[in-house]
Amino acid sequence: MKLLRLYQDQAREHPGEAKYMLVANAIAQGIEDGCLAPGESLPTHRELAEALGVTIGTVSRGYAEAAQRGLTVGVTGRGTFVTAPCHDVDVYEGAGRMHDLGFIAPFEYLNPDLNEAVAELSRYADLKELSNYQQPRGLLRHREAGAHWAGRYGLAVSPENLLVCAGAQHALLTVLASLFNPGDRIAAEQLSYPLLKQLARRLRLNLTPIRMDQGGMLPDSLEAACRAGGIKGLYLMPTCQNPTLAQIPEYRRRELVDICRRYDVMIIEDDVYALSLEHNLPPLASLAPERCCFIASTSEALSGGLRIAYLCPPDAVFAELERTISYTISMAPPLMAELATMWIRNGTADRVLAAKRREAAERNALARQLLDGFPLETRTTGFFCWLKLPDPWAAVAFAEAARQRGIIVADSDLFALNHASPEQGVRLALGGVRTREALADALGTLAGML
View 1 (cartoon, rainbow, N blue to C red):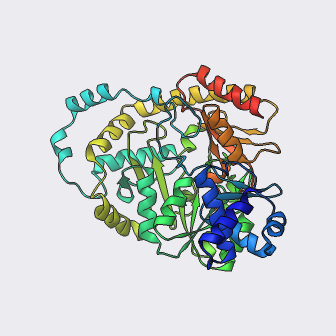
View 2 (view 1 turned 135 degrees about the horizontal axis):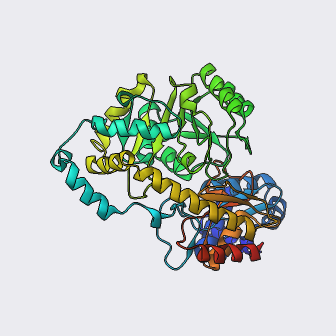
View 3 (view 1 turned 30 degrees about the horizontal axis):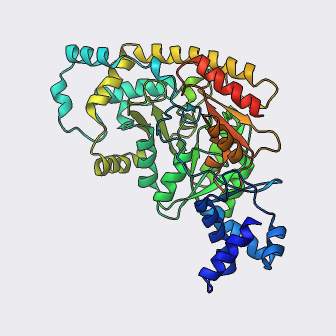
């Protein structure tokens, strides 16, 4: 047994170390040495306890410590597995020769022509004004365009109640840093946006996983967490959840809002993929404007390099959020905000979004065809899909096997808010490869693995 030898090595080198720490350190050493491979199944608690001559409780603590370090993941009913080397799935790193179905880069070859846009800007705009410092909230015309764009999400908002941010991630960071204190608890779905985890860790915020189903977050689970105490905020992508595509129906949205009102919980509505879908669901911010910070992003619909988003907060926290923008970046780049404004006003934004939806529809149809017979969650025009893995696959092992075949996918462990993912699945971004032929090649390979 590999872990027996590794444990014995650790015991000789660190004779005073607690036994459960020796277990965790043995796993870490095995990964570093390469004798424990990503996706490899570790012995059961009982098997390892008998081999090491320790209690099952010691092994359990050791495995928990390893999971805390991100070395392992527990899969209910299947066991404990070595994780793949840590990587940030929603941080673009470039795929090289790989088929990248991990990072959501929505059909960037359909982005507006930047050369044409800059030439047009120089014809009609006073660019000198854009080189000066502005109020942290942004120029009025930029906020007017932002209010128009928020309307695309179904939210009616005044330009006076809107802040221009340097992308949705900056808007999220602004809200978390302004309205919450270290130690505060933020509720989110069991599988949630990976960068939320990273921001929470850096700001010393605690994330509380809330159970979910195909209709998104379960209100009774949220209420139980609120009743237990300490929940200060709620993070949701209600219309097109990342990674599962769950969509919260209107009646459940109203239940969640009622719970937040009863327990005085601030809502963060980060529905960045909502515009990829046709829907008429009301934003949470329209149901609870007094306690919801709504983020209207442009990057996912228009261009990854267009780092502009519009933050629509309650009146009571507007000034605090604007101060945070001032303290961090002074203001969103006015030239970038002007570009977004032009595209929103002249109809480019709507045309590009429509083209991306059409391409997404073709690629979703392709995914359903090639992965027919497997539990695949799709939306007609969604920018990604969610593949639930059959036994005996663990998500981390599947992701590693796919990587060895030249394909990057995002496994469920990357989205899990606790150490045991509630289900084994992978997110497949449909726009990260340029052609449908390349996508078909990658999906066909994944189907063969299943």
